[in-house]
Image (tube, rainbow, N blue to C red; front, side):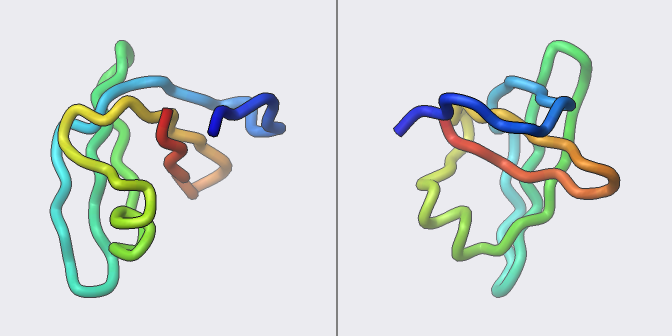
Length: 71
């Protein structure tokens, strides 16, 4: 799967630096050329995206929300 287009303008490509897993939600630290972006997403999403340290992702920032798309 690849992302063809998305309407979120604030996108930061990077690699997962750290994952702090919780029972329900997890913190994902993404290292980008502009610094670290942190996202809090469900642990189920971490598993479904098969995220791990070193995964290439895009952090999609909208207002106060940061979403993650695996590349």
